[in-house]
Amino acid sequence: MEWLRLSPVEWDAMRLSLRVAVWAVLLSLPLGIAVAWVLSRLDFPGRRLLDGCIHLPLVLPPVVTGYFLLLAFGRNGFIGSFLYAHFDFTLAFRWTGAVLASAVMAFPLMVRAIRLSLDNVDRGVEAAARTLGAGPVRVFFTVTMPLAVPGVITGAVLAFARSLGEFGATIMFVSNIPGQTQTLPLALYTLTQVPGGESGAMRLCIIAVIIAMVALVSSELLSRRHATALDG
Image 1 (tube, rainbow, N blue to C red):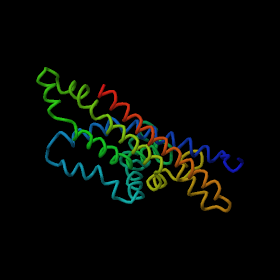
Image 2 (image 1 turned 45 degrees about the vertical axis):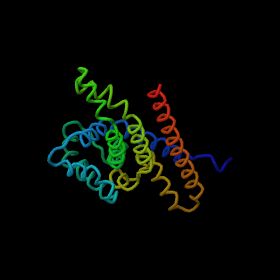
Image 3 (image 1 turned 120 degrees about the vertical axis):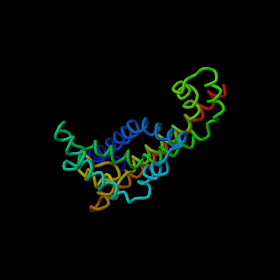
Image 4 (image 1 turned 180 degrees about the horizontal axis):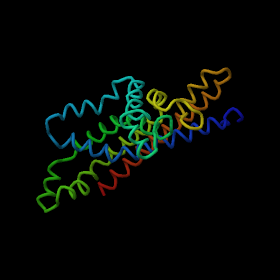
């Protein structure tokens, strides 16, 4: 059992990873739903360009995305300098920057899952609600979203898992500072680079697998529960 005991550094990395992943999902979910709805329901010039920009982090090397974040949100970046000058706030080399990096990397997966769910919503049901006097906002919240909940759950879980495993953009944007920005993947990488770190790396691998499995099982249970509620 001694082998399974986590060191303080490993505990910090696990807690920080969960904190970053949860905040990344919570902060990006409203925007993800909005963007997915725009791509699913609206046809406008530049729609394909918007779709491509959203999915760009999936095809770019993560370190490139992290470098772009550093250029934009670093203390001397065009957004970061404004935040620091007016609000004395910076994202680079802080855990909040890890949240931003994780959210950016996970956003395409979230949007894609939600968009596919919205595409499968019967437009006839929405049209019927409108003929009964429901406005667009009411139709969205009372018809479209309840039917798209499984996709929202899937998108949130995918984003959580992607945030939990984010490495390249995070290490580029916020570095690898123990207790401050060292998430679980960064701690695992660090342990593989030092003598005698193999057992700690294996512990973190097992923890990552367990957390991912819990998230996937929870997603499946929530989706089934929602489907049962709709059928009832």
